[in-house]
Length: 76
Image 1: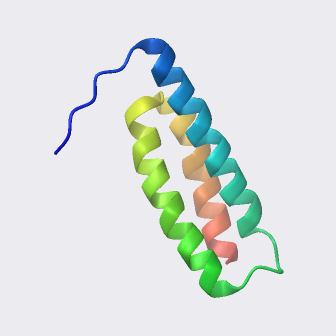
Image 2: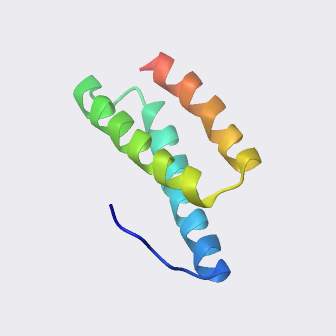
């Protein structure tokens, strides 16, 4: 286990970067041209990033991505 000491500005920056990556993955999961195997890897990456996002984001922000993940993963 690792510990990380960051200030509020760094937390906001991490939240922003993770949200952008999650949004990009969600967008790509809806692309019909992407192979199923690649989408499976993208889903795994989404799960890892979402777990990290939960540590820095508010519960309300997390809820937005929980709903999106359920919709997107069912489509693939």
